[in-house]
Length: 63
Ligand code: SF4
Image (cartoon, rainbow, N blue to C red; front, side):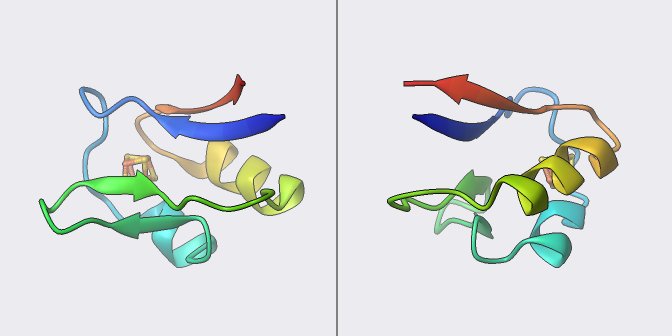
């Protein structure tokens, strides 16, 4: 299965991914953007986030 992942060292905290796809991307208690634990991920919405992430730090990961 494919899950989206964020490279935290590149993330600029802009919240574009949260605005575009709040079911997948959220801010955790430590203040970092993270990927929610979901049984499956909406491919089109995540693709939109990948395209629009200004830091280019979201990618699919095969697990
Ligand atoms: S869109 Fe990219 S840079 Fe912006 S908060 Fe999300 S992961 Fe970080």
